Length: 209
Image (cartoon, rainbow, N blue to C red; front, top):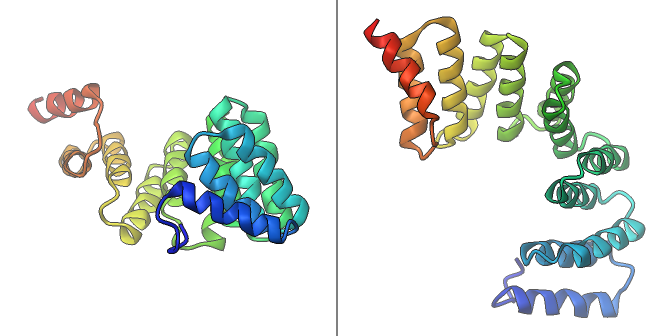
């Protein structure tokens, strides 16, 4: 948020003023849309995002936000379309590839998900969420060692992010290494991750067997 704005309403007023002075500025339309999304005014935000890409066709972030609005509405096809538009509008746009990978994973297309998530981390080697989602995809594919490795990369980038610890724990559980599974899942829990009760019970049972 711009430092001169005291709150979101003032920020919105500043963006509207900027648009009034320069209606062709895609960034101002985009900034206004993001603020409107924060207030859950999705219809208004959507209109501003369409104007943003009309004004600035390479504003890939606007396509990603249009995809986010589609997800919020449960429209996964629309979300896929806009994320595909994001990577077409700007070469090497990592968030678009990561989102495409996530959506493909949700639809069960694990192989294509992996390809897109790998592209995301090639274009942004510090993309924590992409590494984590890639770790999930590898686990679904049965590539347990690759899954553990991808999640370890996520932890290197963001050591306090609980999800990759949980995923690593699942990987070690799959490999039958209960000590390392327990260690990582407990770490995830200590960082605020809500570990499913059945996983805790499985570890407990295997520890005592």
